[in-house]
Length: 105
Figure (spheres, rainbow, N blue to C red):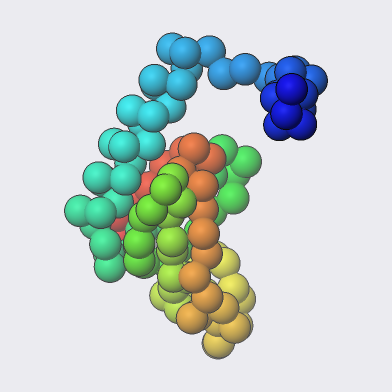
């Protein structure tokens, strides 16, 4: 018996995603990917399930990750007090499954 077969026999998952949950998550991911693709380069506010809020431009969406370029426009409103946003050119990767809302500005 090869060593890879032995390793596979020894592996026991501690979590197995339910097949219905898997189908639902895949459907949501595909929907969000299409939605974000249609709104590339648009200014948005994104809220995560943990209550974090980000303002920026949708740059790209790939493999369940939304890439958001943070906005200078939010620095005076909520996110970065002061005249200069030190993260203005920063691209923030956000996992689509962790997003609660995406709102166009």
